Image 1 (cartoon, helix red, strand yellow):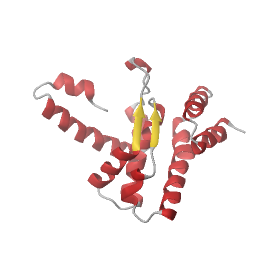
Image 2 (cartoon, rainbow, N blue to C red):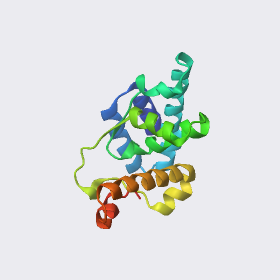
Image 3 (spheres, rainbow, N blue to C red):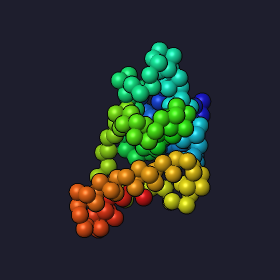
Image 4 (cartoon, one colour):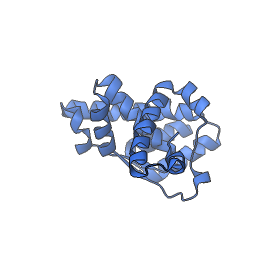
Length: 164
C-alpha cells in the first residue's frame, strides 16, 4: 500500500495522528502537495458530502453532522476546498458557504514558531490550484477588512496578520 493509499484510509477512518504523520511522510518522500489535495483530500471531502446528501437533503446543515478537524497547517487547504464545493458545486453564495465552512472546519495548531508553519509560494499556489487560490484571496480580503476595523491605522498589524 502506498503512502497516499495509507493516508486516504487514515483520513476516511478518522485517525488524525496517523493522518498527520502520513502527510509529513508523503511530503518528505517528495509527493507533490497538489497531489495530496487533488488525490486524497478532495475525494475524501467529496465522499463525505455525498454520504451526507444521501441521508440529508439540506447541505446548509452539513455542520450539524460533519466536522473536519484540521491539525496544523498541512490540511488547511480544506477550508477553501469546502468553500469551492459549496459555491461551485452546490451553488451557494459566499456568505452562506462561509458560515457553513466556519461551522464545519475546526483547527488545532501545536506549532508555535512561525517558521515551522507550512507556507506555499504564491506563484506556485496560484498556478497549481487557481480556483482555491482565488478563494484564499477573497478570504484574505475579507479578513483584512476585519483586522483594519479592529486595528485602525495599524498597517503593520494588517501586514503581519494577512493570510497572503
